[in-house]
Length: 201
Length: 201
Image (cartoon, rainbow over all chains, first blue to last red; front, side):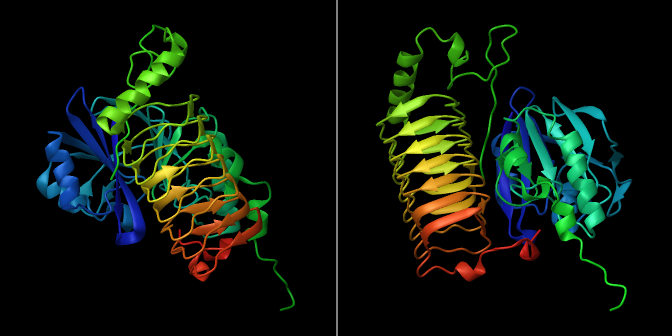
């Protein structure tokens, strides 16, 4: 398995190309855009691009899908039925599927958005905006922050500590580091976010 | 852009990551000391290390200046007096590593992680440290002066007697849990994210 990371100025997001040397196939995760260097990467390695995995339907993670579909014929996986006008193969929590010769597990971790999916390929977790290095994804309420924090604890932190975390934004990490030093996973995190409500103001 | 490849020890039932570019893990290597020495010589001869697993090794007084490191793992590695001066480092993981008196000055580093590492008496001066994760790291007696820290993170890290003078703090998450005798003279520290309210994501 080879993982290539691309940084997009558009939304400051990360796109990953995951290549399989054995099958000469590749998939792309969260294409925020499609750049010449990404095409070069695919062509240079003689990869057949078979799939696009979307962690959640926010524009900084999907903007490149339409361009990709004009050049290649990949299957789009997302927890949505459609992204733009493109029909997706809908993935649900705990779905397991094969693509590009990889066994992929889908783990639903809603909170940042209701459609957030984490993809696990081997010992690598592509966490989108659910989990970043040191912080969890931004939520619209303290309730969602609490839910996201709990779901990460239940569904992701059960994996080995040396699992690699490849987030949708920012630098990479390992699960062991996140367990100990992620601000969003510290006790009382959501409580600190909640603004006290004063009935008399 | 980076690359990361994972290989498992070929001994049936082992499951441990393979050591360096060999077929076996360090535990199944006949002479680990000789294997480590041979590995260092090979890197120096090639001037590059691609997809090599250095986890839990001890490297002392090696000079990897101007070498290229891509997709390498240094998890739990003990590095003492190792020179990475002017090296190019992409998608490498130094989580839990112990670095003493190492020189990373002039390094071109992108998308790497030093989570939970212990960094003592190291120099990262005049470097490009882009998308680098220093979360939970303990950094003592070290210097990052005149470096570009774009999009790097220092969340819940312990900083003491260290210098960050004339650094670029754009999009840097600078939230150490403790910082003692840390200087940031001439740096745009006001551009750094210092609290949870100003997160970008």
